[in-house]
Length: 253
Image (tube, rainbow, N blue to C red; front, side, top):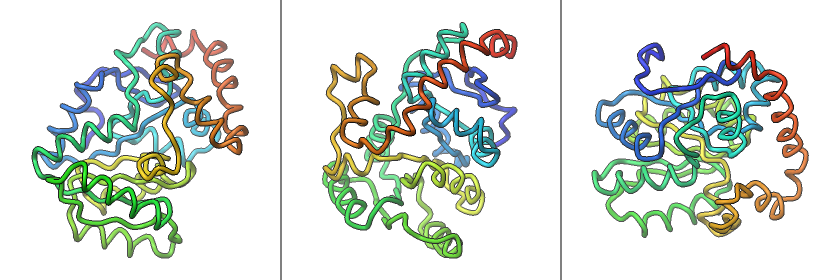
């Protein structure tokens, strides 16, 4: 897809075009992309990913080249408001995946699940098959493979010709891997889903609705995974950076 032909409103956040569409508009847009067989990499962005892009050229390229970047993190929604370019609403990756699966169930699309451990991906696959019986889940495999095995994995997925590919790998690998191979994969919707499979499999719990409304989902996840605290330090750094660069960001409307 030629990004110059993007037909939805965006805001530019450090060279990354973030969609202003709400959930309903996003799902409709991606439904049309699948029906038209247009290749899309979907990134569910948050402040930690923006900070990673500022410090890593490879990661930045993956984010800048994505056909659709949605505002997943509450910090990104805050930043959009702060620079006077508000998005319609937060579009959580977890919810977006399930909204797409609802459409896939209606249209009997093919879905491939990739990432995390063998145990988690298989458990997730079984639960999703039960919840969405008309979706054609054509394959699932873990995300622990080396760079030397990449093309074998890509070829296995490509032969199955899924309409949607959901990928859960490490932060440093997930988006760059999709970016590197998206044209060989030639799948309409390829989306990184982070820890979503862990939640589906019951290994992690999602924050209660009241915490989501208070924008404290990040805190709930930190309580479950204290090892994430180093990554969380990027949140105040992001706020400081946006405050400092407000005029620069605003000028790039």
